[in-house]
Length: 186
Image (cartoon, rainbow, N blue to C red; front, side, top):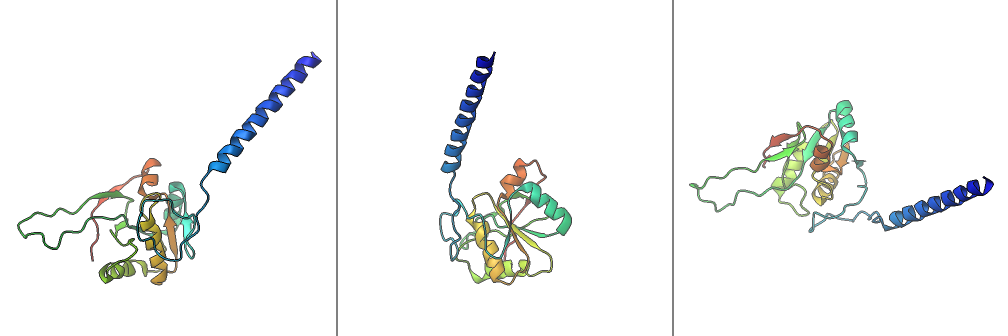
């Protein structure tokens, strides 16, 4: 019986070692956290983003955001890009604004997350971040538009900025309610 127990102990040690090795390989293949750039992202907006934004608080999960909303009544700003009505569109052509499902009570300020923006979009963002309530900026996961817009909000003087990294996709996947919105334009 003693050899039977010793055999089980060896098997258990081997299984633990195998699990540890598998975990180490998985842990070592995780992408490293990227550092924050000094300026705005100008291209390739759908790419991995930093885990942080200097001067802002980061909300990583929809559950954390839901709890934050319940306790702080923040201004929610969705910055997902949307096409603009073409300037040369004939008057007889029907233009229908895009529709997006987003978080309840959010303001969809389309295109305020670009790296370079016209003054009208900067003013639109500025008007919507200078309030006493906290602001939460979001878009989709791995979306530089939200990182850019939160960074710009800080530079425009917003005091209590939160960046929600999981975006609408994370909110939807958590099973939380969405509303349909059209973009707010300058």
